Length: 311
Image 1 (spheres, rainbow, N blue to C red):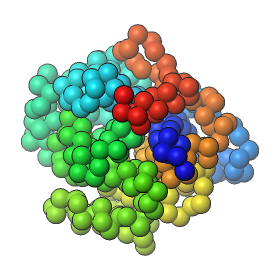
Image 2: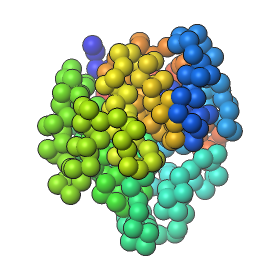
Image 3: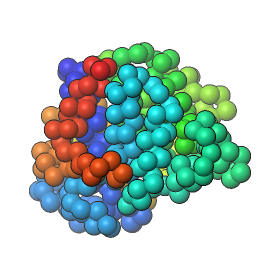
Image 4: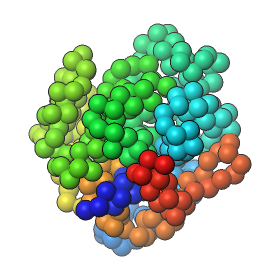
C-alpha cells in the first residue's frame, strides 16, 4: 500500500472515529451497536450530545492545530503550537479537557505551564495528548524511530506534565511509523515497549498485551494508558476499519477519544479506501478561534498529503 494511503487513512480515520464517538461520550457499553445494529447500513454520523452530525470534537481540532503549525513553521515550533492551543482555548470551544484548559489558561509560559500544573495536582495522565497525535505521527514518521518518539513526547509535554502521557503518545507515534513501513504494528509492540521509559513500561506492557481486555482496566479510559490499550485491542480483535471503530465506541466511557485513537491506528493499517464514504462525507472540523474556519474531507486529505510529504 502506498504511504499516502496510510497517511490519509490515519488523519481522516482519527477524525471519523472522533466524530462518530462524540455523541456517545460517557454513555454505557454497547450503546453504538444497540442504536446501529446492522454494520454498513448508514446513519451512524447521527450527532447528539451537543455535536452536529459529522462534527469532530476537540480531539481533531487540536490535531489540526498541530498539523498547521508543523507545516507553516517548517517543523516543530513548540511555542507556536502552544500559542495556537491558547487561542483555541480562549474561544470557548464546545469541549475541552479540564486539565488541558487549566494549562492553557493559567497564564504560565509555554515551557512551564504543564509542569507547574502537574506539580500542584500530581495527576496529569489523561489522554488529551494522545487524542491529537494523528497529524504529528504522520508528519514525523519519515524521520525515523528516535525522532518521531521524541517529537511525540515534546508535543505531549506542552499540556501534560506526567511522563505517562508522553510515553503513550510516543508509542502511538511509533505504531504509526512502523505501519507506514508495511510492518505489522501488533507484532512490533515488544520492540516498541523496549523504547518506553522504564518507569512506565510496565503499565503499557499490561494494556498492550495480546490477552488484555478493556474490561480489565483499573482506570477509566480517559487515562492515557487504558485509552491506548483499548484502541490497540479494537485493532487486534477486528478485521476492518468499520468494525474496529464500532468496537471502540461500544466500550463506552471516553468514546470520542478511544475511537479517535483507534481510527488513527486502523486508518493507517487499512488505508483511506477502507473508511466508509458515508462516514467521511458529512465529516467536518470547526476551528473555534480561527475566523470561523471549518475543514472538510478535502481539507483533511490535503493536510495529510502535506504532512506525509513534509511540506
